[in-house]
Image (tube, rainbow, N blue to C red; front, side):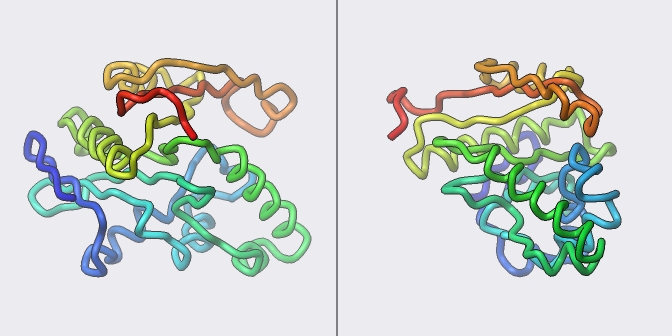
Length: 205
C-alpha cells in the first residue's frame, strides 16, 4: 500500500530499503509515556533498535524524507519484541527484570480485539501538514484490508491536541481508565480509549 495524501506519501509494507538509520532512530525511541519504566529516549533506543517489527509500522514521507510513522498492534504483537536480555544489558539484572515485566504488562494491556494504534509520531518540522491524518487514514485502510470492524487507540487525558485530532478523524471516546496509584509513575492521571468503526459490521469476532 502506498497512499499519497496532500504530498504526504504513506508506505506500507516497508521494504528493507526503508529501514535506515533515520528510521531506526525515530522508531526505536518508543513511547515517552513509559519513561519511568523504560528509561529516557537514549535508553529506549538501545533496548528497541534491534527488535523492531517493520510489519507493524507505516511510514510517512514528504519529498522522500521520513517525517513520521504509525505503529500498530494486532493479534497480541506490537512494533517491538525485546527480550529480557535487552533490558538486562541496559539496566542490570534486578532493575532490568522489573522494567521488562512492566513492559510485558503494558503490552498485554494494549492488546485489543480490534486493530490497535500503538504509536503515532510526526516530526515537529512536519506538523500541521496533514501527516498525522494521512497516517491515520492509511492505518484504518490497513484494518479494512485485514477485515477488521474497528480500530482502537488510547490517549492520555493531558494530550488534548491529540484527542482533537482523533475526534476529527472519526474516533469516539469509549472508556476512561483511572490510573489511580499508577499516577505516581506517569505524567497523566487517566487514559482515554477511543474507537473508530471502519467497516459496516460493528461486531468483532
